[in-house]
Image 1 (cartoon, rainbow, N blue to C red):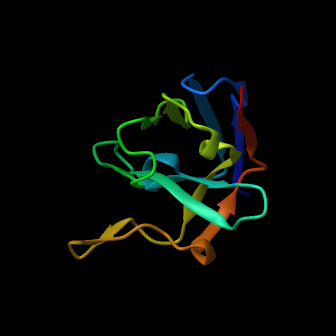
Image 2 (cartoon, one colour):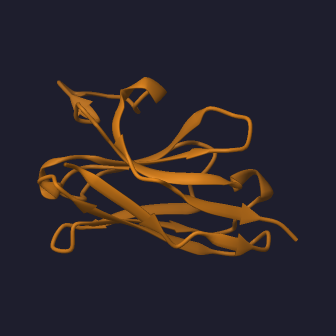
Length: 130
């Protein structure tokens, strides 16, 4: 059984930083691309970032590009999201997730849609407020 457990969320002032972690088990971690998604109050799932299974390629939503950094430690089966220059609109529950396909296939790369996530953790709340 795949288990994903996020941690590191909290309350932070605008402009602040947080580092999220996701501990994974029940899967061959270094064989799958990993993803961060978020859900703001009253809204649907929003893709945030993805990283290739080896960690060499990273992809970001335009809304977080230049502020967030995704990384992974395959020796520890752990995924990270470093979030800087946080804004109130980043307030959401953040989830790490897997998808049943690679981010890139046949030279074509695209982020997952909301219906494609096949495993998600319980999430960690990030609140950006003064």
